[in-house]
Image 1 (cartoon, rainbow, N blue to C red):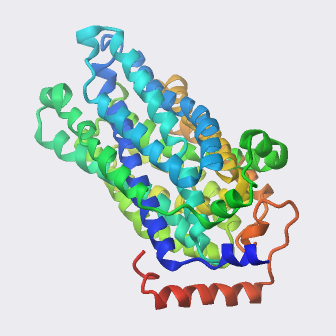
Image 2 (image 1 turned 60 degrees about the vertical axis):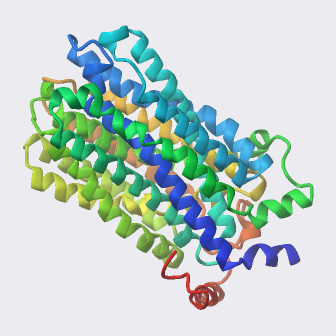
Image 3 (image 1 turned 135 degrees about the vertical axis):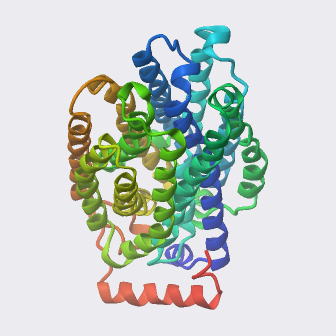
Length: 471
C-alpha cells in the first residue's frame, strides 16, 4: 500500500516540469518531422528525383516520407526497451539528439541534378534515422507525464504531449509559408527550402538542456530500487501484454487521417499534375489554421477524457474523421479554399482530437510500469508505420489524371478508420483505474463517487500550487 500511495500522490511541481518537458520536446521533434512532410509534398518530387517522370517523382518523395515510418518499428523495439530498462528521461534525451542531427543534415544534401541517385539515397538514410529517433519520443514522453500525473488528471496532463506535436506542425508550416510566399520559385527550390532544416540545430542544444532537467518518474524509480525492472522488456511485453499491443496497433491506424490530409492532401492540392492548382503558400494555411484550432481543443478533450472516459472519445473521432475525409478531399477537387479550410478545422482541428488528445494517456495506461514504454512504442509505431505507408500507396491508387480521387482515397481512409474503431471498442477503459492496476488484466476501476472525490482533490491541490490553469 505504501508503494501505491507514493505513486498516486505526486509533487505538483514535478508534474508541471514533466508536462512542460513533454510539450516542448514534442514540439521541437515534430517540427523536425513535419518540415520533412511539407518538403516531401512541395519540393522533393522535383529536386531529389528525376523530374522528367512526374508520377515517379511524387511516388518517390512520398515514399521517402513513408520510409521514415518503416524505421519507426525498429526504433520502437530499441528505444522502447531502452526506456524501460534505463528510464524515461534517459531515452528522451537520446531521441532528441538523434532527431536534431538527422534533420539538420537534410539541409546539406545535394540534389538529383547534382549527384543523381545518390541524392535520394542520402535522403532515405537520414529519413530512416529520423523515423528511428521519433519512435521513442511519444511513448517516452507520454509515459513520463503519466507517471508524474496526479490521480484523475492523467488525460489532461497527457494531452499536452500532443498539443506540443500540433504546435510543432504549426511552426513547420509557418516557417515554410513566408519562404514559399516571398521567394521566387527558383530561389525556394534551390536554397529557401533548406532554411527550416538548418534551424533544427536549435533542437540539439535546447532539447538537450530541457530534457536533462527533468527528474525520473517515481514509478520507474521505485521499480529500479526494488529490482523489478524487466531485463528483457520486449519479451515480457509480448508475453504479458500482447493483446494490448495489438489493440494499440489497431487504434493507431487512425493516423491515416494525418496522411490523407497533411501528406496526400498537400500533394493533391498543389502538384500541377493533379490539375487542382492550389499555390503552396495558400495551401500551407490549411494545416496552420487546423492546428491552431487543435492546440486550443486538445487540453479540453484531455480533461473531458478524465470525466467521461477515453474510449467514447476515440470511437467517435475514428468514425467522424473517416466520413469527413470524403468531404475534405472533395473540397480540394472543387478548388474551394474556404471550404477546405473550414473542413480542415472541423476534421483535423476538432474531431480528430478525440483520439489524438486522448491516446497519450490511454496507450500507456494499457501497460504496467515495467513494459510501459516498450508496449506503447511497439503498438503505436507499428500502427503509425502501417497507416503512413499509404502515403506511398495513394498516388498509385489515384495517380494524376485519374477520376474520383476523393472517392478512392476517402474510401480507403474510412475502411482503415473502422479498424481503429474496432481496436478502441475492444480495449478496456482505464480512466478510473489506480496507477498500480494499469496493465493488469481484469483490473476493476474504483467506484465513480470515490473517483470524482479523488479527482477533485487533485484539482484543488493543483490550484493551490497555482499550476492548474498554467501548465
